[in-house]
Length: 69
Image (tube, rainbow, N blue to C red):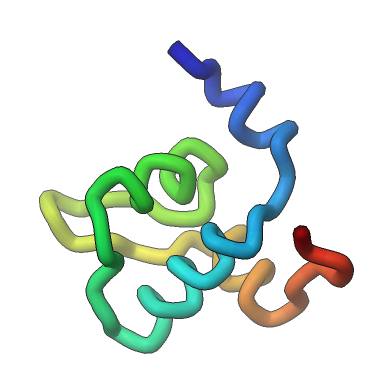
């Protein structure tokens, strides 16, 4: 099992940022497993089955890191 601290230390992956951008546009995320890293890193919270982008997630969308792998 991956701990939350480990997930956060992995940094931002291009696929995670793409999923976060899709959520911001109101598009569904392709797989439920794509949501797990976003929640573990604190970028998205679930209210029932509705994903809500957190302040941290919004900040990441507004100021994406450079040099993504």
